[in-house]
Length: 175
Image (cartoon, rainbow, N blue to C red; front, top):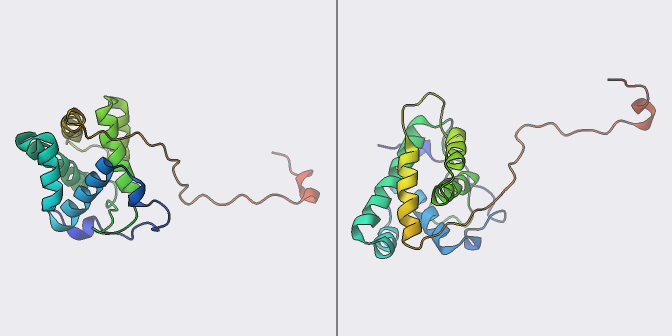
């Protein structure tokens, strides 16, 4: 179904974004992402908490919707999704992005959902993960599992550092 190597890359530095700094709902979602990615099923505690909070039927729907989004990203992703292994004390950038995807869905921000999916998925795919995101986000929000909106600056990728020009040359350069 989903190859483990499709998800695994080196996780971020544990001192950078600690999972302990997330809300309870965010921690539950991250543990769910990780166990679905590495074990192909959620741990019993994640499933139990979703069923307890959302109700048995809606808890199963949320589980299926979140797994569907992960599978679609695995199949049509621009690159392998970087999720940390279960038990890792830090949160990866992709895990934060997934949390923000569902947070945007809870707020009804269709353009926010589309922006995250555009970043995660290759262009031209025929899938519609925004349906599953909206469905899961609505049930989670209705059941009291609110995801906060977090703003984080994107890290520059491969941007060369700017070197200030020496004063002697600065006056001679004309652009």
